[in-house]
Each structure stands twice: as structure tokens, then as C-alpha cells.
Image 1 (cartoon, rainbow, N blue to C red):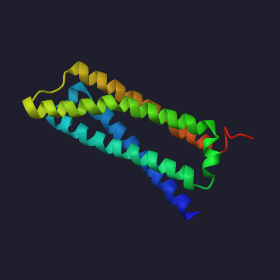
Image 2 (cartoon, rainbow, N blue to C red):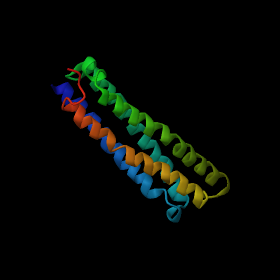
Image 3 (spheres, rainbow, N blue to C red):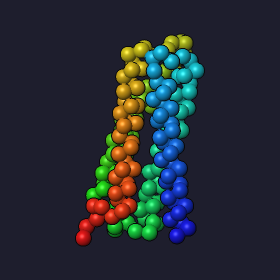
Length: 152
């Protein structure tokens, strides 16, 4: 019971961290706010967001295998597959913003150039798309935890 509680806590902490840092990215990634400090900060915020996503994924897997219900119960439930698919979708969408933030920083350090407004808007759309998919994952989780989608 203690292990299950600690795993749930670690998973929840990772979720909250992920939400805070994707929200920070969305707030910072605006053409009207873009300056050298913002570019540097976006790279840092995105790195923490990525770490939180990694911790979230690992704690989720550990909960599947060492949690109370066990892997057979989880893997047979279609809602787990929905959660994982949504998580993978968010992860794939996040690749482009991560690469752009790093490129913006390289260009800033090399020439002092800031990204074009259109590029910032395009990246912000991807960040916002992630931010709108992420809340669907815990929605599936609460139904999963209450036995919806289980066979039998």
C-alpha cells in the first residue's frame, strides 16, 4: 500500500510539473514577448517539461507493473491504450517546438537574431495543441482507475 501511494504521488507530481511547464511555454511563446531572455528561458522551460514527461512516463509504467491492479488488468483495458496514444501524440507534437527553441537560442547566440513573429506563432500553435490534448489523459485515467473499459 505504501508503494502504491508513493508511486501515485510521484506520478501526480510529474503530471502537475508537466502542466505547469507547458503552461509556461504557452505564456512565453508569444511574438510580442519575444526577446533574448525569453528565448533562453523557453529552452530551460522546455527542458524541464521534457524531464517531467519522462518521469511521468516512467512512473506510469512502474505503476502498471508494481501497482495494486497489476499489468494484466491494465494492459487489457482500452483506456490505458488511449492514455498512451494521447501521451505519444503530445510527445511527437513537442519535437518541433523543442527543436525550434534550441535553434532560436543558437541563432540568438550566434548573431543576436530573434525568431520571426510568424515562426513564433506557428510554434505557439503546437504548444497550445499539446496543452489542449494533455487534459484528456487524466480524464481517461480517472475512468480507468474506476474500472471503466475493463473486460468482464
